[in-house]
Length: 230
Length: 245
Image 1 (tube, rainbow over the protein chains, first blue to last red):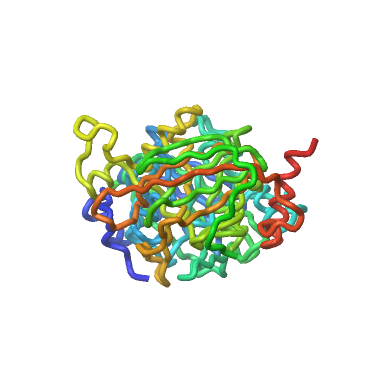
Image 2 (image 1 turned 90 degrees about the vertical axis):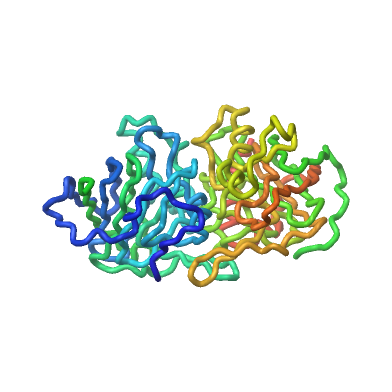
């Protein structure tokens, strides 16, 4: 898929936001962490900093939300993002918008090709609907989100879990309006790289779902790198 | 499954008309049905829904689409909360497609598209926008920006092509089109009649809609929404568990 360089609604991003980052050196990263399969992660990325999420072993859904670190009532909004770029898939050039319409981050590099923001996060309750009542006990992204929020003192709760991004997840929509969870288009080592346009708090669940192909039925670790503003 | 002429409700509870651009909120009890009728072509009704007994439970775009393998809503669909339960189901629909992925207009968009329009100049004809309309209503229940969920846009059809690019169907909603919602739990419903955010009309032309509510009782064992897919059978089960004596 070609880079999305011209949003119909202007995305308040610096002129170089869509250009690639060149070869960022992992040894120069200010943060470089592995998130094990099925685990949550929280961290902050300051305006201008670059964050890279690496799908280490391939086809791993990374459920992700962003909050304005200086005003947590402002957060990622899937529908504002879709509306702003007139397209349902995320890739290079996509401006990730907030519930107040501001650009929070811009995708500046994407070696996967496209990412989902319609599929949401799995939860114990939606698993009972989608698969079987007996699936309630299984670990889920919402449990990861809730536990991460409970252990951090940001004042965020279930109320603050809107529709998220699923990096590396493939949810094709047909022109007739069909929607399915398809086999992934990612592979080992593919990554997505974003530049923050504001100070953001990042909430991730490295998806533990075992009932559909979003993780190739085998959840695996991811790597998160953050570089200082350059 | 569409029928072209709406039947007359047997026991009407209330009816009212929303003016063009008006925002509205109200509580629809389990077993109540609501018909929304477009008075003119190209209406749009943005909707958000919350469990009135626990406002933390709310309409969930992703769970609704995933459970039913669809990217839009029509008759037979259930509107799911984030708790694996059903807020309402769509029991009749004359137009076949309701958008739920494009969100709302906002003040900056309305000003850019239609120009400035202030109360000082226009009095109550000033241009409304979807987000502020929702915030107006949400504030009446102690809700705010944190509760701006992905909404439904009744009567609007937006398709995605193979590359994911969106296309707004200007011919979709005709005068007299209607959709009927049967509420499966006590639901706070918040509505705005502002134009769809992707409607390319260069004039600000919101449309009036009629609301009509009546008592239908909950879904029967043979209800078409329940039988649409196994997922919905489980969604109704989860919902009914909440209302056991």
